[in-house]
Image 1 (cartoon, rainbow, N blue to C red):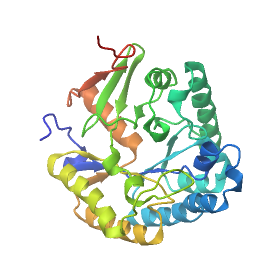
Image 2: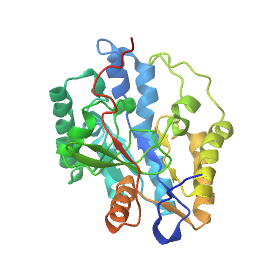
Image 3: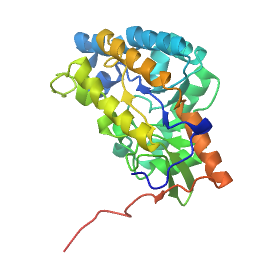
Length: 296
């Protein structure tokens, strides 16, 4: 089903990285700039992520001996520095996810560059190294995003949904490794319900919600794909859900032929395979269209 499978390290059947977007309460302040500070219950729900969920997640990763990737808005890094320090101390990757989870598509090119550079500065100051990867807040990758990322020396993006395996996105400025996911691997449709955020969905029980992610994993495992869940600590980091996730991860790791790695490690492997001639990826030129599409 995958026509051009990539060779994963040490004969692994597939590559996997659980990515956590630690948005915390940036979401409520962005959605309600005038009165977000008064929405105490919503803030408590979102703060559960850095205060309770992430320490629990890090304990599991330490027990299982894996290193994974966290996408964190720079404002959240400034608000929760101790959590970020623990993530870095555990050997995990901190990647760029905007400043206050702002929408890149709503800003000019210069405004996008400002928030990208401000986020880079915050990440570098708190982690000691520049970020190599970026995920657009709410997948809102703009027609300027690729150029700006290339200008700042990023290795990869993880916002797009155009394949089951890594591919390249190319502009006149250069190229990036794209590590794709999709909405079927996002935990919001399964586990999030919030009146304050305007997202009213039936909440799935743990077994039913995780079944969707397991089915996606089994397909990646069968055909040599890439499994990148897009999860949030305030949602999947909840006690009952993480209890189920930990058991699922133990089973996956027990197979012995699944490569769990950070997205930076996966992107570096992809780049190395391309440079050696071991892998010829699909290349997508961006932006797909020079302007609005109209018909007459």
